[in-house]
Amino acid sequence: VGRALPEPSFGSETRPGGMLTQEEIDKCREAFERFDKDGSGTIDAWELKETLKAMGQNPTDEEVFQMLSQVDDDGSGSIEFPEFLKVIEAQKEASAAQNDESDLIDAFVAMGGLTDKSGHVEAEKLRRTIKAFELTVDIDRLIEETDTDGSGEIDYDEFKGMFN
Image 1: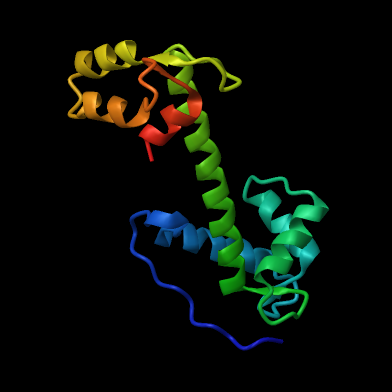
Image 2: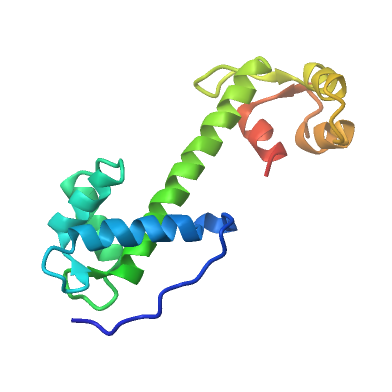
């Protein structure tokens, strides 16, 4: 069995970069202990899958083994609690990235683009919308930087670039 690593300590607020809140860590600890059937301080692939299911996820066997291989630092074939937190953080980051992309596509479509990321947003419509909502964005500068060909049309990649 691998050496015990110190448990990370985070504040109660959500941290950037997918860091877990103290409340999330506490829930992870409860789930981890519930599925550490033999009390060894580790969970194997089957226990990991059951733990993730109990936390509302439904990973495939392949995904479980991939997660395990990414965080099983000591090559034991099972994971200790600090390694388990890495799995949960990675899942949280992946989920956040997917949600961010979905929100961006929704905004693109609301402005005139298509759900498959084709089409474009008229620069003038974007300018009017920003000003109508009284947002403190230098939209003229942003459009000038984004619409480099001066077409007055912003495609999805340009639109996405405006928010990064």
